[in-house]
Length: 397
Image (tube, rainbow, N blue to C red):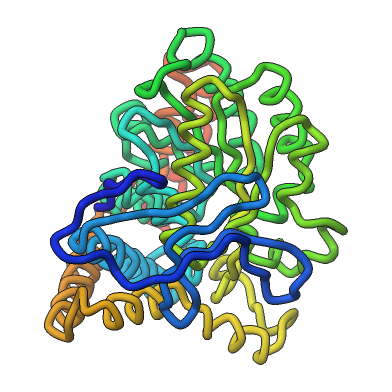
């Protein structure tokens, strides 16, 4: 687990990795806008970079912390792949893969402090993992066994939200409450992060959240994972300007980060969260990344994007670049990589076995947790549904 802070040197177990310093930001593929990058696609480490906001971003981790980030990336990808396979085999009703977005999620997830609160969409399996939640929890949700089994208060990670963009309003209200409770203004204050995608940025809920967060100076980081497609709609049909620039129109800062760079994502997110906890209000991060797989398992991305585009992004793979960095700096050897691969395989097998062992819930239990104290209408619906189920007893159906 990474513990270092951007801008603060963390002493490691060996000499600092060889790197270079950049005074500017890196250009994204189209060359039209800047983004913060600390690790190139070939694994070259950039010591520090000054963003368009004038902030110098850098991280200085121990060797073990660098290896820990790589471990997180590999395990998260493997568990996600196992979930996709389970869905294809009929064991899950649906699955939204994070393939390609591991660095955006692990980097931001590890940047959260213990007291910070996260509001996810339905794809933040990597952030969930970083918050210490058993990865089987979202699989129970998508298998229809439960509605998500973790305690949001215990893990400081809210329930998955299927309604596109709704979680940004929930996060804004929660963040306003943090301020009202006097939990900001110090280095150990509480900050909130809300995840959403590029498509959700067009939703009214998200824009309303921007307004409220800005006006009430809420300690909130809006974290947009721009994976280039809102299901089948490409980014150019969502916006004419880079998404992070929208923040300025609402009165708070925005910045774009290489979302396939786990180090830069960590640095930018930690800085934004710390600003929020100190009472400096909301900000927006656009993690520029790519969804390598389908939007969900009900989607066919080959219908709306070409193979060459996917191949171009494969060259920017977040795990490959982190592995290249570890190899170049002699922080890890083949034995380490083999150990991580075996750990990932073992955990994936364990996850599969536990999913298959889940008991099928009785259909009538869908009524159990709709209201905390029940309701006459709900009781009537339960009774009607029970009679319907009973009508099949002893029949050929």
